[in-house]
Each structure stands twice: as structure tokens, then as C-alpha cells.
Length: 273
Image (cartoon, rainbow, N blue to C red):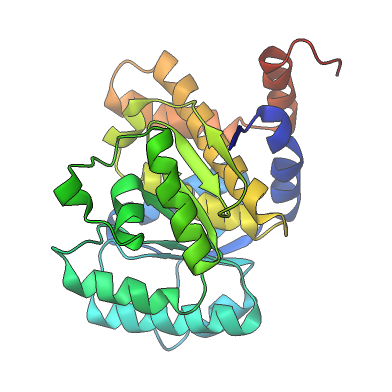
């Protein structure tokens, strides 16, 4: 895997902001407001249509779909399966966020495996969640969702190959891979793990990005890069967790192609722009 840079991200951010993709977010109760605000701040168009009576129809007219199983119920599971099936039929790109799966939570783990049959375009999870999908007991291994390192990248690659998808595995280092090639992102801050909704809203931004371009791997990496960079900049200005959350939204709303070009010049001063 190779590092992802601001220069890589510029064309995908431009396309995303030009198209303002409509993202159907079937996400958890805790993060809906934060998710909608992040998509709006970056130039996307969020919508939350959870009911089984209309969710599939809305998926069909959306640019992309996010399914996040954080606050799962039986009724929601049925609606999510309905929408995922519709996305597969219509070719709508979609992101699966398998929040909290593992041997201790049988119901959600079962539903996630049923959702996998509908071929998610991207799976976005932390290290522990991706390890579960790889068939490894992350709890028994003592793996924390904040851990990272080249030794864990193999799990993302395994899952990507098994399910023929893009895997975004987030942690101290983010890994984005299709199983054969991929990117790493080392920017960011641990403060992002202390604000509810940053990971779930990242999944929504990934959905928005893949809804605006066919270059799925680079689009997913762009979403991760923007979130990591905005978090890093927000941490420099924040005086506590409350101000960090607000500053984070400010920073990500200020991520423009022009700003990324300035960052690219600092990242690679040897290149003539």
C-alpha cells in the first residue's frame, strides 16, 4: 500500500462538490444529526428514509446508500436488507458499516452477513470489526479498535478479496484496499475517537464520494483523507472536546480543492505545481 496525498484527493473532492450526491443514510439514532451536518458541510446531500415501505424506492433514486447497523432492530434490519437488495439490483453504490459485530452480538452479526450477500461496494469498519469479517476472534486476540500497524493490513486485504469489495479499515493508520492495491493515511488525531459519530459520518462521506465517481478506491481514500486532515487541524485549535467537535465541522467544511492544493505543495515541495 502507498500513502494517499492531498494531490490524489483533489479531483475526487472537486467531482463530489460539483455533483452534490444524494446519500441515503440508513444509520443509527445516535449519529443522524452529526452525519447529516458533515455531509452538508462537505457539499453532499443527506437523506434518512428508514421505513421499509419507501426505503428501497428511495435507494433507487439516490446516488449512493449507507447502511450502518449501530442501533439495529428487527424492523430496521428488514428495511436495510430491502434497500441493500435494491442497491444491488439497480447498481447503486453502497457502504456497509458493521458496527459492533462479533461473537457477543449474534443478531447484528447475522444481519451483517446477510447484507454481505448484496455485495456492498465498500465495507468501512475498525480493526476489530474487519477482523471479525475475516473470521478472526478480535476479542480473543486482544485487538483494540485503535490499534494499527502493517501486520493488521492483511485483514483488510483478506476481507476485500473474500467479498470482492473495497475495505476501509480505520485506526491510528487507515487502510483502504481492494485486496490487491491500496492506500494508507497516517494523518488524524485520537480526539476523533472521543466524539460520537465521527466514524459513522466517515462512512456516510465514503458513500457520498463513491456516489460521485466510478473510481471507488480513490474516492473512499479521499473521504478518509479529508476526515483525518480536518481532525488534525481541529485538534490544533480546540481547547476541549466540545470545541473540537465544532472546530472539526468547521475544518471539514473548509476542505476545498484550493486548500488541498496548498496542502499538496507542503507535502511535496519538490513538485512544481
